[in-house]
Length: 149
Image 1 (cartoon, rainbow, N blue to C red):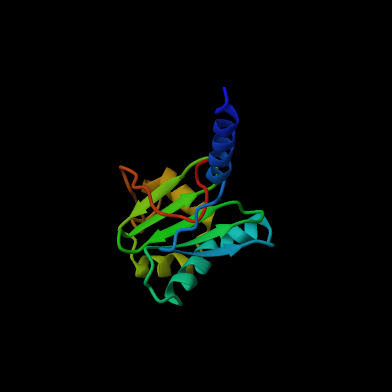
Image 2: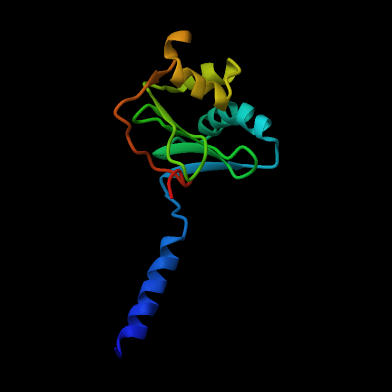
């Protein structure tokens, strides 16, 4: 019984450290907020593309995270050629596309695709061109966001 306060303090400390958001040094994150949900989602792909192109390309992953009204994570992992989406942080990853190269990101940015467009392509790939291919099985990617709690 004498150790009970120590055990409680230890468990409380572990719980508090578990709530701390992990920042991965190998992920280059651009946080956006302040716009409407529609505006943030419309600009997600162009911002991700510009963020990646203007980077030193020395990170494992590049992403745009909406901390505002859009509430999404758009993650690009160049070495694995993966584009991964989370439409509602805390609810898990939504979709993942494979064989995504820099030129693919450029086509998406210049083609006016929005974050929501990517979800539609994943749900109906036959109705769209073969620009994006859904990746299965899903590969977990590093992120500075919280796709799952």
